[in-house]
Length: 219
Image 1 (cartoon, rainbow, N blue to C red):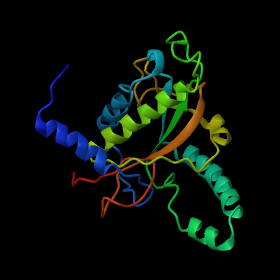
Image 2 (spheres, helix red, strand yellow):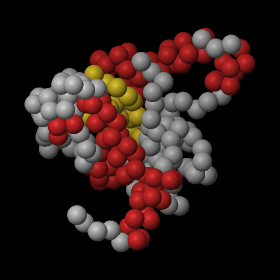
Image 3 (cartoon, rainbow, N blue to C red):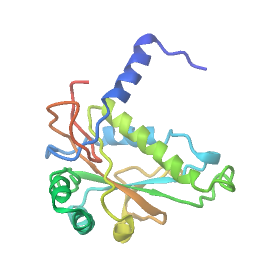
Image 4 (cartoon, rainbow, N blue to C red):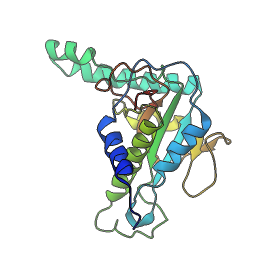
């Protein structure tokens, strides 16, 4: 097993401690393609049940698609607001929950609940482990983005089924060499989450929640 220096161990624990969820104050500049590729490559290094790698990452830059996903968020957000009493609804309304239109890139994360890869190893008695594996990949993505000086948040305030038909975009799959800049493909797995990605003007290390990349250069 590879040994790590004290400095390398400290850097890992620091990245874990400084990870934040970002949803506001994204910068308009584009995310560097090489940086995005490195972050996605780190996600693909996550552990997975039976080495099934059931995750898929759909990189969405097109504003029209992001606007449609944002409309899905608005509907779900309105339903959530209506479920609260007046005081709670007011507090809920003050939360920053989206960032879908502000960030220049969104990432739709999907999970194949019945991947052919792995021959069902570990999923016959616990089929939910495919989704657990996808969550591990998201955490890898999040931490890698943090050390790149980018902020990531996780947007779960939308019904993923409501934007399933928008999942035709640039897809990065562990079973192919497709890159984030390659041609459009159709995604089969069901989306489980949406993320907003973009550089972020961070003033502190304790605020905000969003799925996206964050330009916190103070790491």
